[in-house]
Length: 351
Image 1 (cartoon, rainbow, N blue to C red):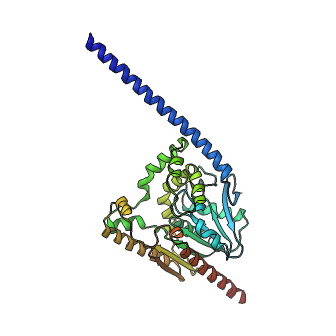
Image 2 (cartoon, helix red, strand yellow):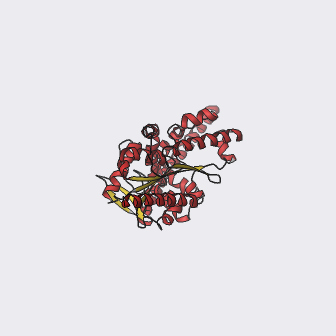
Image 3 (cartoon, rainbow, N blue to C red):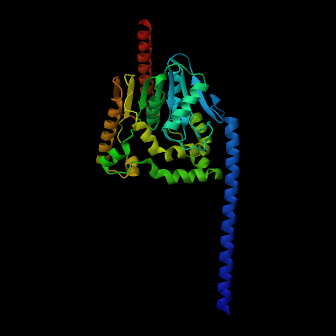
């Protein structure tokens, strides 16, 4: 009888502990949801869009144009949640010598999300509609970082009549997954992080994404810029996940564009050696990392050859985000291409 009574007490206490833990979990979820709701409200109040929202047919996209002059520089950010924020250190300085426009793709920062699949051809269609509705009709210089490279490459294939020049900032190559995997026996497909992105998207309403980004540190970005990005991260993760899902189709779209003609083109290639933590994250030895970088350099050289006036510039002291590690290099490259485009226009006017 005593033994039975003892087990009954244990079961009762176990039940109470489990109920307590469940109640605590529910409380945390409720608090997190409130934290997220307040965060989104505060983001809208404290960090309104710096540019303007343009209706492209049922949804709005954010574009932030600064400065004056032609050609117009259009920044295409990489895969992630930063959008326009990624160009913080170069935007204003480029705007001192020509008009410079950064924009947010669907579901990123201040741009509305969309339900249709995202891939390079769809990104090109959105950008074309945005520029048209924003009244930007002068020649363009497209500046694409990372996956922004395939996006701009695809844009040239679909709407190239307005594109006068390009700058590729450590841009992705359509064949990089196979080529890098062969060079160092590593899975270089970003889709391996897909489950993380989908989980973050599914749980964004709980405040987990906002909390993680708020405590992630700002790196080399100014404090205000980092705060803006963190404020909208739980929203932007949806757009970033959609782009990640369309990665393979994006590479197919870009691969179909074989030439940039004779447009001025500068390909900036980040060649700073991998840091120990980066090597560990990729499960690579230092020698593997060196081979990885050399193959990346070769891939970038091939992209420079897309134009008869293309050249590659190696940036030995910058990581993937050259526009953050070495903004002066990006600014100088854009200035050079702007100068060439203007010289082309003057030569054409004299004929």
